[in-house]
Image (tube, rainbow, N blue to C red; front, side, top):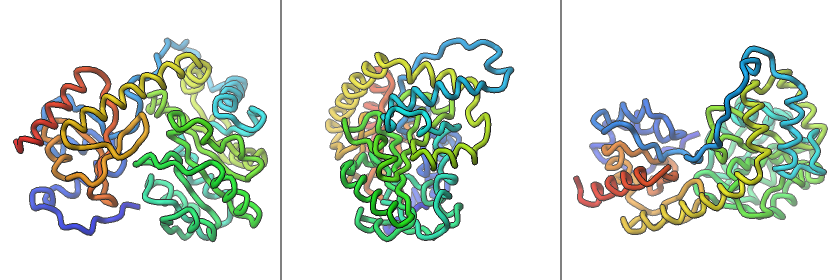
Length: 357
């Protein structure tokens, strides 16, 4: 659900509003960006997503990974690693359901409770509301955690997308217990928890509190195209989800890349340090341009109360794509540039905006 802006659009932007909205929906759509800015220089610098620009190194895979059906033993190995990395209760693989991306999990997770009232802590990732609607729920947007109490299905993105807001673990566990006690369900989307605060995940509480946690593989490991994600859930709900997805829910190549990356603790630790350093570098760059960072995660920075449309259009004309929002017309989200050349290009685009070129 995309909330429309209450502010009038500048004439130069209004003519291109259809393409601009499409680009702003999820980010990363370079075909729509090219349609919106046909004169922009190529190649595009895409800073519109929260995907790590430093992906996990890809090893060559044997041909049989592509020619044979995925092996159940490899799926179990992946689930065991995910259980350990994400902190499932007892590190138990039977709490983990892998799938071809968390996006695929949204409708079946929303369908774990009968159709009723769904509430999404907003403003956040729009696909949760759509998935709950597809599962038969009447969906509302909640502005506070307390407003989720009356829902049959409550959804919290934590850390939040797009602003990085974090809800305390204790508050989520307490909410999950209350909803579960009356047959409801709390879903916590932890897509960015790999770079979230230590101890903030509720993955270890899913059994005791009746919570379902969603974890993304592609964002932190920079391999969004692999399409891999996980639900961490109470055993009974994990079993229902797994049965609904059926066999071969994850491709052979995704299994192998997931096993390698989740098993590489050294790479994960080094990458968290590097992302923190690069986020601070980006903060300094944006502040120098008069765009102080309000919040975010080390995979994206969130700008609030800035001339978002002007910046979005000026950067787009320079071939730099950032994330704009109808629901937050004074906000932008900026992903991490991959290297010195990308940082330099962003500096040049911001100078163009500042000069009015």
